[in-house]
Length: 362
Image 1 (tube, rainbow, N blue to C red):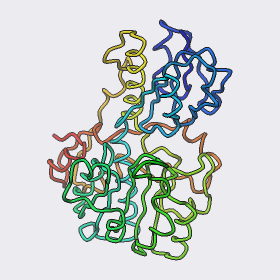
Image 2: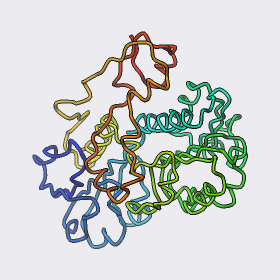
Image 3: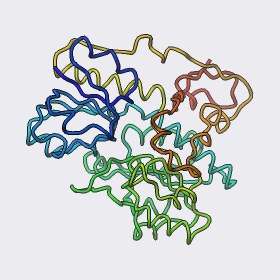
């Protein structure tokens, strides 16, 4: 058996060598010649798994250590008997932390009172639900938009996108990138929908770059100097729209989900998907030693905003002045820790609130 794997997926080296010939390559360098005789691919979003890569190969399984799947041509795989798996929810807590840090920076910079703000969450899945809890912990009014969920669950408090855009002070996107179907998300924030938004709104995108029409957002920011954007994902990665990055209050290189917990879980889910498919017996796999066993304690008179900034300094990941280093930054990123890695005591925040957003408490 042969496996071709992205060399930047952590904790993977050595796992499958007892079972297969494993070739490690950078994700954006994996080509047809490399996968022609491979049985399985273990990839990230950088590897476009389409007919150009897969036609004429013996690939049976694609395991992606990511929550998204827009880099996989699902129709082609289905038509050609290629199975695929992703890691849904693996980094939800990390994205929650990134969104929290971005909002805290904006609130402090713009001197806004969180209790007067409305947070609009577009897409209420694994990540979106955690962001909903975060907004409530901040004391904000939270409104939601998720048409697929609303259609099947008849949720009374959900709004249409148009309604949400007109009400929210902060609009954060947590949707997959889809260009077809009943509810496409491609450019859901565009020149037309932006006209519904408040002129001092904060736009947050940590989902997929194509969800926002970047040119339209840039124009909106130019015309509305009190509006802001916090962006982690970009439409033409690794090539950023540089002026948009420079105008954003937060601009990071697609690392919102890059916590140690998120990476361990993504690799775990990919490993177990390959193991199940080929019956390798790697059940409930974890890295050995497991780096998640290390915990940290935070004590003292500290509020929620400062607590979040203590766990994650989002300014350290700013790429506005060196966007050309986008790919290098991602590939050499030092993984931060989720809220769950921190044990908090004697803090000026209700313990129930801390637990609800993932912290441990004493």
